[in-house]
Image 1 (cartoon, rainbow, N blue to C red):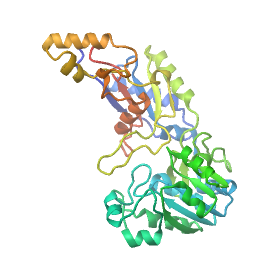
Image 2: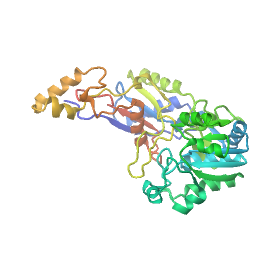
Image 3: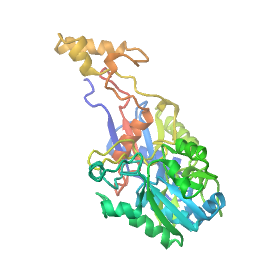
Image 4: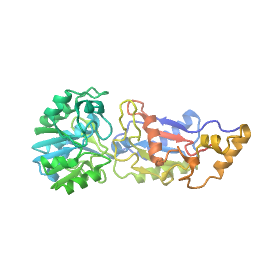
Length: 396
């Protein structure tokens, strides 16, 4: 009988992970126990994915706000610091801001508007249009912002992030001044020591600041790149990808974990004779149409993955073939013609009209997004996701 099921995504439950746990063994055991419990088998090219959170937890990759403060002070001087382009997040940035403010006497906080980099809105474009404000050129003081727009609470969290971030800075013992601008160079009018907090545009922002004459420039990826006071660290991403752990501690993005994914792959091969792929994933890469929030607040979707996950899909659009190349066929003839096209497709379909509308994204970004939606971020208790049939096509 023909297979009637394509891609399957399964959340796999596992124990609560603590520092020092043997994560390779836990992942392998949890997947194998799930196959026994639910009565399914593993196949070649299945993908075992695990959240970055459990990897960092097993590594013990944590740091305190005092560690952040000490590193910020050492790298940016501890006087007046410009903190520009942060995302609006209680979980992602607020805890970091507390540590940053502890490492300075004054913080000039420059917020992008009408939204942050990942789409959290301070304002709407309609509000800007009504007020005659050009976000590409106009710089607003806090007083002007309040005069024009008053208090604006986040649609989902109900937080006025302008007030919230201001309070965090003052409670940490620093003076605060808030401006709203979208040109990085504007901060130089206030201070030449700058911490840029954007994620995916950080390289350009650093270049613009350097060209504008900033004396000391750091990104979040430059803070906690090495251990401070015995803390955790991430030598590649620093504070990027970190999350709040407690009121005075963060969990950093996991350090080097390529060995982990490769070891899991080897263990599964030895146990089952199946060659699976393995990856670590964080945020998915997708946008919420209601809140306009782009999910990806991590520096990458996947910090580690096995070789079979390198590349992009190479797929034909079935509806294109059905509506164009084989528009006069139906039934078995249509099925056979499409199957023949798939079996004979080129190794690289870039530029082929029959592949238009397929998703030209990295496999790790696509699979990581699927896994992020499967595992969720709450109490599902499934930080491991098994994806089966992802590499299948109509002929399998």
